[in-house]
Structures are given as C-alpha cells and as structure tokens.
Amino acid sequence: MLTERQCQLIEKELTEQPEPRKLGAYLCLNMGLMLSEVCALRLRDVDLASGKVNISSIAVKSREGLSLRAADMPRSLPMPPHVRRFLSRCMGLYPGGDCFIMTGTGEAPAFYMMQNVLSAVNKRRSIGATLSAMELRNAFIRRCIQSGMDLYTLCFYVGIRQPNVILKRFGEYFVPRPESVAALEKFSLDCRGTQSGDARGAGMNLLILGAGSQGPVVKEIAEALGIFSRIAFLDDDPDNKLAIGPLSAYRELREEFTAAIPSFGDSELRREYFDKLSQAGYAIPRLIHPSATISKSNVRLGVGVVVEAKVIIANDVSVGDNVILSAGCVLDRECVIEKDSHVGCACTVTRGSRVPAKLRIPAGSVYDKKERYER
Image 1 (cartoon, rainbow, N blue to C red):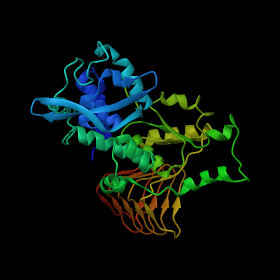
Image 2: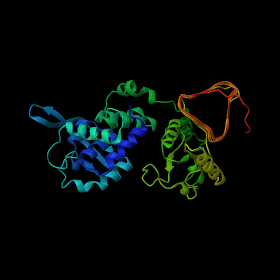
Image 3: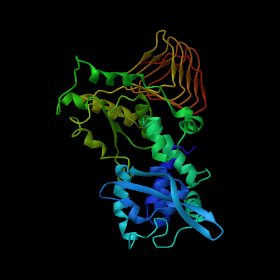
Image 4: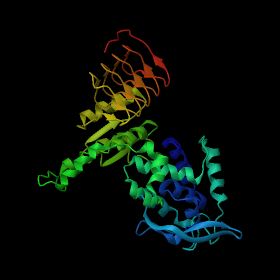
C-alpha cells in the first residue's frame, strides 16, 4: 500500500506540467477510478459546473484493439474540491468534448499509456514501489476509510458491489469511532445543539502547524479519532499544497479554529509554536491513535502529546507536554519522557529510563539511561 508521503510525491509529479496521461493517473489517485473507467472517460463526462464526473462507459480489450462498452456500475461522482480546481486549470488541454481525457484527442487511449507515465513518475521521484493504476486506486480507498467515509458510500463511489471485497483488502484501516455516539443528541428532546454562527461551532476544527512529513501523520490520527469537523494545515513552504496559509496565519484563524497543534520534527520549533498557540488561546489537544495501547495504571500524558499507531505505554509512565511518540515505540514501566522530546518509530525506552527534554531518539533504537536529569 502506498504511504501518504509516496502519494504526495506522486501527486506533485502529476500536477507539475500536466498533460492528458497525467490527468488520467490523477483521477485514479484522487477519485479512485479504475484503469478501464479512466481510459473510457471523455471531456464531456466531466461536468465542472455541477462538480461531477459521469461514469457511463468502460474500455475493454478486443481483437480489434480497445473498445468501449456500457459500465457495469454507471454512476455520477461528485469531485473533491481539489480535483475540481485542478481540472478547471487543465481544460486548455482539450479542444472539444469528444476528446478522451487520457489522450486529449478523439483517439481512445491504450492501457499501456497509463503504465508508461507511472513508470516515468517512479523513476523521477524514486517512489520505491511498483506503481500502477490499481495502486493509486487503493490509496484513494485507504484515504476514504481514514477520512471516515462509511462502507456503503465507499462501495458506490468506487464501483464495488460487495462490501466484503473492501473489508477483506482494507480491514486494517477501519477503526472504531465511539465518539460518534455524540451525534445522537440531535434526536433528543433535550438537544443542546448550537445555533448558526455560535462560536462554539468551531470547537471541533483542528489547525495543524507544519505540513511536512510529520504533519500528515498527525492528520491521520486526528481523522481516526473522528471528533474534528475540519482539519487544516499551515506551513511556510509556498509549494506545499496541503497548507491553507503560512504559519503566521494562526493569529487570524483563531475564530475559525479553536484547537491547534504544532507538528514539527525540530523540537525547538515545536516548542516555539506550542507557546505561541497557548498564548493565542488555542486548545492544544492530546492526539492518541486508536490502535495505541496505554496502561490504565498511573500514566500521565501532557498537553499536546501525539501518540502514533501501535505505541505501547506501560504503567507508571510520565510523558511531558509537546512530546511525539512515533509509531510502534514502547515505553516500559516507570519511564519519564520529558517535554518536547521525540521517541522515534519502533524505539524501546527501558524500565525506569529518563529521556531529557528536547531529545530525539533515533528510530529503531533502545534507550536505556536511568541517570537523573534536571527537568
């Protein structure tokens, strides 16, 4: 399965100097289209006014070459906003509505055209994985699951009749969302729903400062929790398409986002923005992945702690503010992890060890130091 970092590299390549074949691959990644569907897609099937892509035909191989037939599951698919914006910028590639999306002409594409462009992307970006239209589609399905899309909507969108097909292939990405029970209040006579314009309505929006390699990990955890209505990034890199503005924009967004968290590998920078967000009045949440295992016996987690997938925390452990616990790390009994530190992926911190403030422990290492450090 493609990682989110790999997906970002692929999308960057597909959106730079766009051409018809890249648009076809882009739709596999961002709308989950099958190769047979995108090869049959014409410009007239893309309705920018309504924001929908109409799937009515598929391409099939025959003795005469490629031919078109009616789709097994014809459907009209709403475009994600970013897809609509990107396609709007690319309309100049197509002289008329009969043009195929993959060729830019009235000539139907061959299946190998997609693989050619993906092989070139892999070579230029060193993705390190076998790229195919199916791998892009699988990444889209994973993203939908992690964004909380229900199973039956997902099946309709990607054209799969049997939900068990998705459950068998992608079951590991489904997580329980017990917090969603709060939505049942709308059925109660004692409903305390907020009025339109009430400032409390922004209370479940999360702002993530830093959209580099750490930021998308934090976003995935926040999505897995299912408690945020909106999640957005700020970053000073003008080429980072995930960001809605620079880091300094946190000041102007205070009314729209009441929760925020810094997401930088650099501990000094993370502490700087932790303090700035606190002073600006943001709530800084603890983000704990549902797959993490945390003892119920005397574990203290500070403000702004990020606990990634498969982390294990034993009893009598203290974790300070603004700490990152990366995926798969293990904190043995009686550990102290001081503020602003970062325990790398698959690390083990042995029993009774103390990790000093702002230390970064490399991935895969064993940390065994029981000396007493000043807090």
